[in-house]
Image 1 (cartoon, rainbow, N blue to C red):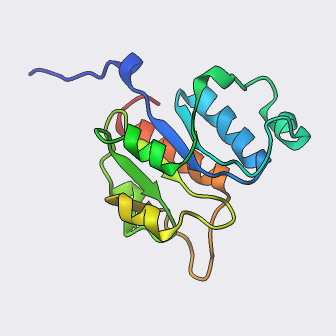
Image 2: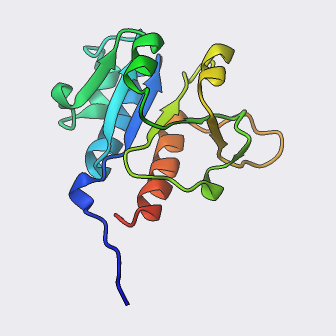
Image 3: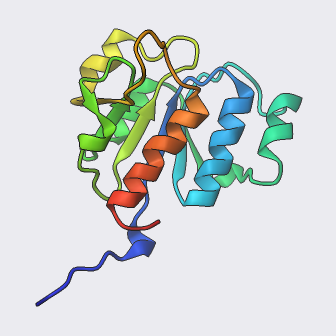
Length: 160
C-alpha cells in the first residue's frame, strides 16, 4: 500500500490581517506565526506604528520585519493573490472552519478587530468560514481566532 507524505518544508500557511488596529493583537499574531511556521501578511493601513511600546512589549524578540509582507491596500493584496485561495475568517462566515478542507499555501484572511472587513471584501472572497461560538456572543479576540484556525489548518495538513 502506497502512502503519501507531505513535504513539511513546503507547507506555508499565510495569515493575512486586514488593516489591523490593535498593536498587542498584531504582536501576538507575529509570535504565533513565528512559533507555528506561518507567514504573516498585513494589508495597510495599520491603526498603529510598529514603534508603539504596547506592540514591542508583546512581540518581544519574535519580530522579523523581513518575514512580514506588507500590501499598500486591499487592491494590491487581491491582485497578488489571483492564483491563490483566500479564505476569510469572519463572524459572518457561512460554515465552520472545522468542516473546511485546508490546502497547502492557503491564505487565511482576518479582519480588523474593531469592524471586521467591509462588504466589498466579503464579495471578493469565495470561502467564508466562522468559528462557532455560544449564542449571543459577538466575537473572539483576533489573536485567539488566528491561533484557533491556524492550528486546525496545521492539524489537517499533518504538521503539528
